[in-house]
Each structure stands twice: as C-alpha cells, then as structure tokens.
Length: 134
Image (cartoon, rainbow, N blue to C red; front, side):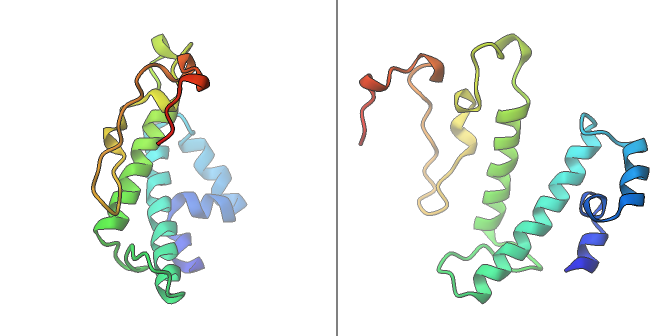
C-alpha cells in the first residue's frame, strides 16, 4: 500500500520529490546505507508479491504481505547474493569476471534445496560448442 511505502525511505524517495532531494543530500547510491534502504524496499515489494500470488491462487507460496515463509526468505537471500555477485566484483578481476563467475553456493533451489554448481571455467572462456546440455 502507499502508506506502507511512504514509511520505506527508498520507496518514498521514488514518490516524493522533496523527500528525494533531501535524501540525496544525505545518502548516495555508493553509500552502504543506500543498499540497506534498498533491501528494505525490496522486502516490502516481495511481500506484496507473495500476497498477490496467494490471493491469485498461484501454486507457489512465499508467504504473505505481513511475513515471508522459508521459501520467500530464501528468494530474498538469493537476491542479496545476486546483488553482491553483480555489483561487488573485485576490481582486480573486473577485466574478465562477470556475475556468472561468482560463488554459486548462494543459489539454492526453492524446490529441492540443491545448491547451484560452479562453472567449469571462467564464463568468458566457455566455448558454446563444447557445452553439454543436459
């Protein structure tokens, strides 16, 4: 709801120009606090999606608008892992490393609990003609 989003700084930042200008003076997108604020907004948006899925009788249940279940929490944890893989690449590796080369252990099937396997070599070095499709 709008009332809930107005309590989340990043959501309000997107809706209220005066608030946006005030927040920009205090926090920029390189600040660790910005990431924490963004995570809070992502949680709220995902909780609303979980509720919409439940209300729409979608067969996957991630919780409600009030509380995520174990699968919902796992999805958010993987989203955070994905953020780190995409945006926090070590500058020494940035000439070759992509998010696909990150640690796959943070990606877990919500159905089986199986953890993703690492690539056999750097993504940029993979020859698609050598790929085994299972």
